View 1 (tube, rainbow over the protein chains, first blue to last red):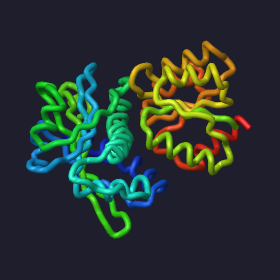
View 2 (view 1 turned 90 degrees about the vertical axis):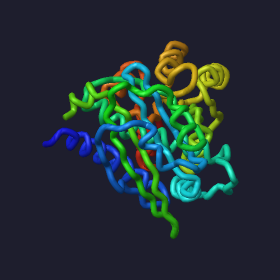
View 3 (view 1 turned 60 degrees about the horizontal axis):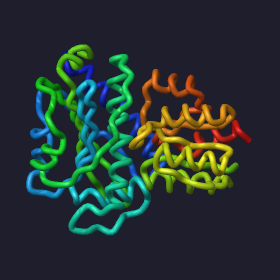
Length: 185
Length: 117
């Protein structure tokens, strides 16, 4: 198995298991559209959200340190709401409080699925950080995350949802300190 | 069964409440943090508490320990997205009656609740 490959498989399995369960309890069809592992940064992963008022749910675990992020474009939020809750919240120019609550819980579930897979493999027990919410363009979301680990491997996943004729794609990524990533190679 | 739901996320509390009501249980209250949960528990004595793990302020584990100290016979089911094997073990050792992992299915919740009826 090549370095990075094991991490990809681990992330893929953890997320697929979680999305399968969400598909069973919700109205949408949820799947992993892709996983990649490699060197990178939060700014690089969020670059696709430049110029948009995107939404992010993030968990910063100081004790490792490890950062996990879910980011979504405004255009995809209604579909995510419909898929997860069965209701599309009225959309406004900005992310509404109801959407923030929905995204925070969805992010909590998805980020934990990804993180737990890694922590279980590393045999680390850690109470994850409280998920936090931020909205803004790529630069302000990156700033909200705070300083990143100096040397980190990025485990990034693209997730997809089909729901009632509409579809959404959004991102999840974890910045894993390189020393921990090497233990999983 | 008279149940208290404790979760910092309003949507999750509402979704769990809907499921419990559909199952014929009575949700007698909900709380968004550990302090509120302990106050409610002391005053209302629910038959079962569904308790989130990661919350602002007291964690679910700390809240669980306080509830068990107040009433060792209290029945607390942890509901959490955290699926770390050793964390689940810690919660059970601290007195949780069961640990339900998010996202959970209707049948899983029903199965857990059957134990207490």
